[in-house]
Image 1: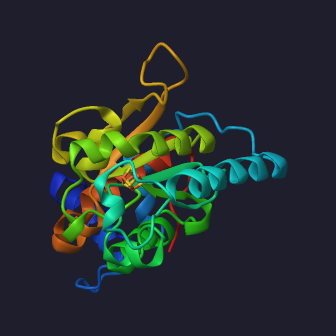
Image 2: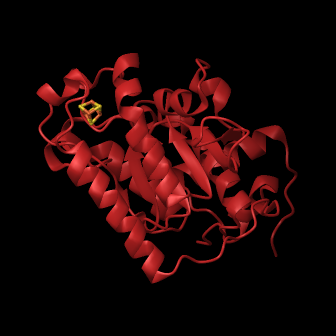
Length: 262
Ligand code: SF4
């Protein structure tokens, strides 16, 4: 017989931390989550607020895929709109499903991405994959992953304002083609670029924001954006994984994605 437990802010915080460690790839805490405990959070069981959209047919997927390839091949690969073209090895356009319900958007390629031409590879990329697959129960190929900048800033420095201004249109067109039901902005530069704010990630994360591809609330439907911590930051400070997991659960609740049972 299972003992009833009393929920307190402390037990909730511990549960959040344990779930995050178990689901997002940490191995410091040898803790197993009892079956069913993951879905007891009020956030996890909240009703979906975004109605499920009609599934995207194969012709539409093909059309979107072609449109993305044209932008990548004809515009991004030969792009010299900012100084970063001179130091890049490869441009890094994006990867994943053109019909992805969720887009993950980071700030810029790092060393591994610059070499491979694919976003979020290396250690931070593996953690993002864990967040998607172990945490959210999705396949990496089911979502779309991109960055604000398509070329690596030297020494992985923060993107400069003029670089973002030069490159942002590519991202806006990716979003417009993919039409995600939700965007997860990874880290401050991505969130600030999308939301046109200077607020820090600690203030932005954990709540929904509206994003308009058109740049104005007067045109088009808003896309909900959930800012959260960048996986590279979570590698440096794993104690923040609980907050990142809480953010992911808000996205899953809104889109009606069930939390995987273990
Ligand atoms: S970062 Fe963007 S704007 Fe700058 S050269 Fe690369 S693709 Fe062009």
